[in-house]
Length: 147
Image 1 (tube, rainbow, N blue to C red):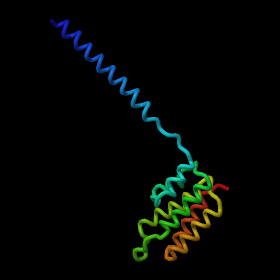
Image 2 (cartoon, rainbow, N blue to C red; image 1 turned 90 degrees about the vertical axis):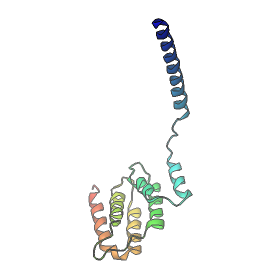
Image 3 (cartoon, helix red, strand yellow; image 1 turned 120 degrees about the vertical axis):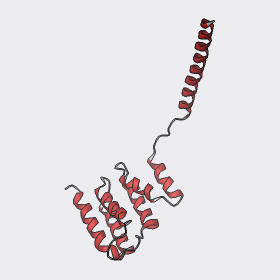
């Protein structure tokens, strides 16, 4: 009687294992990841108002092309160019994001002077009270570039 129960248990566990293996291969084949395409990245940006963090990720990505950087900077200036007002003498805490943005864009391997100057000038034009802080961030960013 014990041998019959043991054989039935082994047969049941083997059937369950077979089903699980089948589901594993079937589901893994169905979930193939799409290839990353830089053209899709820029298309997704233009479809709806882009998320600020998405634009920052494009700038942080060292594989982003000069065209992608230019488009990301244009969209940042269009939708997120206005920095919240200063808190008395201190800069608003969100200014640190813009400071990092300037540092990243200056340090990016595919950037050029036109992108850097456009970002700096437009931010200064939209936020005159942050002129000194923006110049300081730009200086730090340019100093991180290699000769």
